[in-house]
Length: 164
Image (tube, rainbow, N blue to C red; front, side):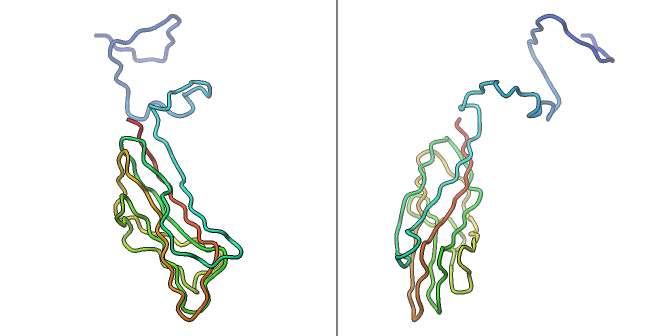
Protein backbone atom coordinates (compact mmCIF):
# COMPACT_ATOMS: atom_id res chain seq x y z
CA UNK A 1 0.00 0.00 0.00
CA UNK A 2 1.26 3.49 -0.75
CA UNK A 3 0.13 6.89 0.41
CA UNK A 4 0.26 10.25 -1.40
CA UNK A 5 0.57 13.27 0.88
CA UNK A 6 0.29 16.03 -1.70
CA UNK A 7 -2.05 17.20 -4.48
CA UNK A 8 -1.59 15.58 -7.86
CA UNK A 9 -3.19 14.58 -11.15
CA UNK A 10 -3.70 11.34 -13.03
CA UNK A 11 -3.14 12.00 -16.72
CA UNK A 12 -4.37 8.68 -18.07
CA UNK A 13 -7.36 6.48 -17.43
CA UNK A 14 -7.44 5.25 -13.86
CA UNK A 15 -9.25 2.15 -12.64
CA UNK A 16 -10.04 1.72 -8.96
CA UNK A 17 -10.85 -1.79 -7.82
CA UNK A 18 -12.24 -0.48 -4.53
CA UNK A 19 -12.83 3.27 -4.03
CA UNK A 20 -13.46 4.37 -0.47
CA UNK A 21 -14.17 8.07 -0.30
CA UNK A 22 -15.13 10.22 2.65
CA UNK A 23 -18.86 10.77 3.12
CA UNK A 24 -20.05 13.88 1.32
CA UNK A 25 -17.07 14.08 -1.05
CA UNK A 26 -19.32 14.09 -4.14
CA UNK A 27 -21.33 17.31 -4.45
CA UNK A 28 -23.90 18.45 -7.00
CA UNK A 29 -21.33 20.70 -8.70
CA UNK A 30 -19.26 17.58 -9.45
CA UNK A 31 -22.04 16.09 -11.61
CA UNK A 32 -22.20 17.32 -15.20
CA UNK A 33 -25.51 18.79 -16.31
CA UNK A 34 -25.55 16.31 -19.19
CA UNK A 35 -24.58 13.31 -17.04
CA UNK A 36 -27.75 11.41 -17.98
CA UNK A 37 -28.25 9.73 -14.61
CA UNK A 38 -30.98 7.10 -14.95
CA UNK A 39 -34.29 7.83 -13.21
CA UNK A 40 -34.00 4.49 -11.40
CA UNK A 41 -31.04 5.91 -9.45
CA UNK A 42 -32.87 8.99 -8.21
CA UNK A 43 -35.39 9.89 -5.54
CA UNK A 44 -38.48 11.37 -7.21
CA UNK A 45 -40.40 14.32 -5.82
CA UNK A 46 -44.11 14.60 -6.62
CA UNK A 47 -46.73 17.23 -5.88
CA UNK A 48 -50.23 15.82 -6.11
CA UNK A 49 -53.01 18.41 -6.19
CA UNK A 50 -56.74 18.31 -5.67
CA UNK A 51 -59.20 21.08 -6.59
CA UNK A 52 -62.92 21.66 -6.70
CA UNK A 53 -64.51 24.22 -9.02
CA UNK A 54 -63.63 27.71 -7.77
CA UNK A 55 -66.35 30.23 -8.47
CA UNK A 56 -69.94 29.06 -8.45
CA UNK A 57 -70.27 25.83 -6.49
CA UNK A 58 -70.24 25.55 -2.70
CA UNK A 59 -67.76 23.01 -1.36
CA UNK A 60 -69.00 19.46 -1.81
CA UNK A 61 -68.27 16.23 0.05
CA UNK A 62 -66.01 14.13 -2.14
CA UNK A 63 -63.37 11.39 -2.09
CA UNK A 64 -60.80 11.54 -4.90
CA UNK A 65 -57.65 9.51 -5.56
CA UNK A 66 -54.74 11.91 -6.16
CA UNK A 67 -51.74 9.56 -6.36
CA UNK A 68 -50.74 5.90 -6.59
CA UNK A 69 -47.24 5.20 -5.27
CA UNK A 70 -44.97 3.60 -7.89
CA UNK A 71 -41.63 3.66 -6.05
CA UNK A 72 -40.75 0.76 -3.78
CA UNK A 73 -40.81 3.10 -0.78
CA UNK A 74 -41.56 6.75 -0.18
CA UNK A 75 -42.16 9.49 2.35
CA UNK A 76 -45.05 11.93 2.57
CA UNK A 77 -43.55 15.36 3.28
CA UNK A 78 -46.40 17.90 3.53
CA UNK A 79 -50.17 18.09 3.12
CA UNK A 80 -52.16 21.31 3.15
CA UNK A 81 -55.58 22.58 2.09
CA UNK A 82 -57.67 25.72 1.73
CA UNK A 83 -60.52 27.23 -0.24
CA UNK A 84 -60.83 30.04 -2.77
CA UNK A 85 -63.89 31.63 -1.12
CA UNK A 86 -63.98 31.57 2.70
CA UNK A 87 -66.69 29.95 4.80
CA UNK A 88 -69.21 32.21 6.51
CA UNK A 89 -70.59 31.64 10.01
CA UNK A 90 -70.31 28.16 11.48
CA UNK A 91 -69.85 26.30 8.19
CA UNK A 92 -66.79 24.05 8.07
CA UNK A 93 -64.90 22.02 5.52
CA UNK A 94 -62.78 19.06 6.66
CA UNK A 95 -60.05 17.82 4.34
CA UNK A 96 -58.42 14.49 5.16
CA UNK A 97 -55.72 12.39 3.51
CA UNK A 98 -56.25 8.64 3.30
CA UNK A 99 -53.82 5.88 2.43
CA UNK A 100 -55.59 2.75 1.20
CA UNK A 101 -58.87 3.99 2.69
CA UNK A 102 -57.56 4.95 6.16
CA UNK A 103 -56.78 8.46 7.43
CA UNK A 104 -53.05 9.14 7.89
CA UNK A 105 -53.31 12.63 9.43
CA UNK A 106 -53.38 13.20 13.18
CA UNK A 107 -56.71 14.95 12.48
CA UNK A 108 -58.44 16.15 9.33
CA UNK A 109 -57.67 19.75 8.35
CA UNK A 110 -60.62 21.92 9.43
CA UNK A 111 -61.27 25.02 7.36
CA UNK A 112 -63.70 27.39 9.04
CA UNK A 113 -64.69 31.08 8.91
CA UNK A 114 -61.46 31.97 10.72
CA UNK A 115 -59.50 30.91 7.63
CA UNK A 116 -59.38 33.58 4.93
CA UNK A 117 -59.84 32.91 1.25
CA UNK A 118 -56.70 31.29 -0.22
CA UNK A 119 -55.26 30.64 3.26
CA UNK A 120 -53.08 27.53 3.30
CA UNK A 121 -53.89 25.34 6.30
CA UNK A 122 -51.25 22.71 7.06
CA UNK A 123 -52.13 19.18 8.09
CA UNK A 124 -50.03 16.99 10.36
CA UNK A 125 -49.06 13.70 8.77
CA UNK A 126 -49.17 10.88 11.30
CA UNK A 127 -48.05 8.05 9.00
CA UNK A 128 -45.49 9.32 6.48
CA UNK A 129 -44.18 6.03 5.05
CA UNK A 130 -45.63 4.70 1.79
CA UNK A 131 -44.81 1.71 -0.41
CA UNK A 132 -45.50 0.66 -3.98
CA UNK A 133 -49.20 0.53 -4.90
CA UNK A 134 -50.40 2.57 -1.89
CA UNK A 135 -53.38 4.66 -2.99
CA UNK A 136 -53.54 8.25 -1.66
CA UNK A 137 -56.93 9.90 -1.56
CA UNK A 138 -58.22 13.34 -0.54
CA UNK A 139 -61.47 13.11 1.44
CA UNK A 140 -63.59 16.25 1.81
CA UNK A 141 -66.45 16.46 4.34
CA UNK A 142 -68.65 19.56 4.59
CA UNK A 143 -70.90 20.89 7.34
CA UNK A 144 -73.09 23.79 6.20
CA UNK A 145 -74.36 24.65 9.69
CA UNK A 146 -76.27 27.94 9.71
CA UNK A 147 -73.62 29.72 7.64
CA UNK A 148 -72.46 29.46 4.04
CA UNK A 149 -69.94 26.97 2.78
CA UNK A 150 -66.83 28.26 1.09
CA UNK A 151 -66.02 27.50 -2.55
CA UNK A 152 -63.13 26.05 -4.46
CA UNK A 153 -61.61 23.60 -1.99
CA UNK A 154 -58.01 22.70 -2.88
CA UNK A 155 -55.28 20.52 -1.39
CA UNK A 156 -51.63 19.81 -2.09
CA UNK A 157 -49.52 16.79 -1.15
CA UNK A 158 -45.71 16.67 -1.45
CA UNK A 159 -44.05 13.27 -1.42
CA UNK A 160 -40.75 11.65 -2.30
CA UNK A 161 -40.45 8.19 -3.79
CA UNK A 162 -37.43 5.91 -4.05
CA UNK A 163 -37.51 3.94 -7.27
CA UNK A 164 -35.58 0.92 -5.94
